[in-house]
Amino acid sequence: DIDYLINVPLIKGHCQTGITCALKNLKGLIPDSEKRRFHTMGLHKPIAWLNAIIKQDLIIADGICPDPYFEEGGRPTSLNRILLGFDPVLMDCYAAQVLGYKPDEVKYIKLAQNEGIGSPLSDDSEIVNIYESIQPDETRIIQKDKKYLRIVDEADACSACYSNLVSALEKLNTSGITEKFADQICIGQAYRGYKGVIGIGNCTSCFERYLPGCPPQTEDIIRFLQEQSKNI
Ligand code: SF4
Image 1 (cartoon, helix red, strand yellow):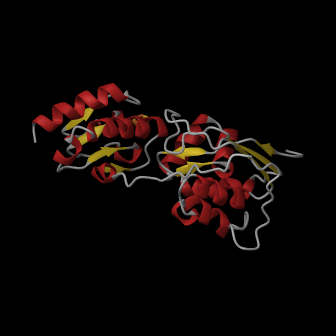
Image 2: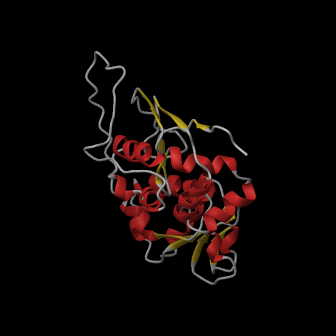
């Protein structure tokens, strides 16, 4: 039983869901085995369903200096804000905007709204600025179209595995290697036992060519994909 739940999430980017804030942070309450199961279910729906079961009473979200693009935190950006609220859907809609997304681009927010967990941002939403900085806030986050992600077939991948692959592709993209791949690069627990061509991680061990690891490290993925690109 919980008498009163105070949720203290970070506002930041996430490689699979776009953002993470109040709704996704409740995943911290469940055991690791359940977290893995969430990934096998595609993350968005179980995040919404978890919030339908566990009600949060107060949210204090830290958006002081997040990485707006990635949960690893390698690109901290000064946004200088702390949000306090009661509605996790409204909070996440606001966080999505701050991080350069339209709220409807983050699937689990809409799913949570459909579950009756909260209300989206609208003209009627009450947002009060308690502290206005003397300096005008000119920071605008623009999410780039990550075209290189189109060569990835992700199916229920763990965050660490997927984020290592995204980091590797970001680095390889600058040298033009990602454009060479005709075959999709597969990653995720849903590929266990399935055949394919190029796979990342132990879950793709039945593929013709795969990189072992659980999760494989970014530098190993870079080396593996560089090697694969020579065979194309
Ligand atoms: S290889 Fe390991 S880390 Fe990667 S998706 Fe499979 S279980 Fe998750």
